Each structure stands twice: as C-alpha cells, then as structure tokens.
Length: 214
Image (cartoon, rainbow, N blue to C red):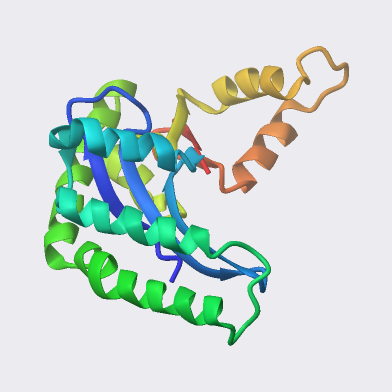
C-alpha cells in the first residue's frame, strides 16, 4: 500500500506537471480509508481534474491503462470514499474497505506494477531527461546525475525547480528568496554551505547547483 506508481503522461505537453503518478492509500488515522491520490513532485490531489482529463482527452494520455481500467479505478475510489469517517476496525464498513483495497491491488495495481508499465515509464523518463537537458542547457551526464540523486520516486521534469550556474549565483538568488538581501554583516558563504547541506540543493561536478522540488 501507498506505493507511488507511474500512471500517465499528457502527450506533447509543456506543463510542468504533465507526468502523473498515483497512490491508493489504506486505513488512515484509525478511522477512515483514504483511497486514490493523484500526485507528482510538485502536487498532490487534482483527482477531479484528472477524471475530467481521462473522460474528455483519454487519447492524449500515454498510459497502459484502458478507459475501462480508469472507470474501474474511479468506481473503487467512489466506493471507498462513500464509506466515510468514524469507521471502527472489524466493522462491516472496515471489512468492505479491505475488500476494495484487495480488489484494487489485484486489478489496477497489478497492471501498474507490470513490466509493460515499467517499460513505458522508462521511455517517459528518457523523454523527460531530454526535456530537462534542453530546458536548462545541461549535458546528458549532468541530467543523469540530477535524476539519480533525487530522493523520491518521481522521475520527470517537475523534480527540477531551477538550476543555478554556480555557488555564487545560488547565494545571490536565494538571499533574495529568503529575505536576507538587505541584512548587514550577513555571511554569504555560510548561508550557501547551509543550503547545500539540505537535500533540496545538489551541486553537480560542473559547479552548477540544482534546486529540487520536494
């Protein structure tokens, strides 16, 4: 449960969030089933918007799921949401929630964990690496390093927030972003090294620094 799985990509899109992933969560906080979450490096939610996308523009999605598969997924989500809150373990609602999760795992999740979906995702990753290389003027080696170092399962353009040309460029821009640009006696370099201690920033061998989206 709560695996982040590649779901679909919008074809020929310039949108940062064109690659969609999903989680199907189980019993949460001891009293309800959470169910479907459409997610990405920079967003979580938008289930209603994604349903509309499937219904109105399915042919513009790269995905191994058929329209019928999506219909089944949305039906399971509607049913699990209808169980509501305040569910007690071993109650009829709880047992039905577990049945819905098992049905999801044996149908939709099984397809998304298949070699077919992994192969499609690998193709998407290569497309996304090409996009990032072109967008930020990076080499293939640099882009591979950026994707390999990212600390979550997302592997698409949205993981890159921005790329600084060097250490000084990062300090100059982030001082302004953090509101430190007018402070007297400010230690620029200590600030910069502190940033690099965070998983949000990663320095490439070329000296360029990536700010990741988490």
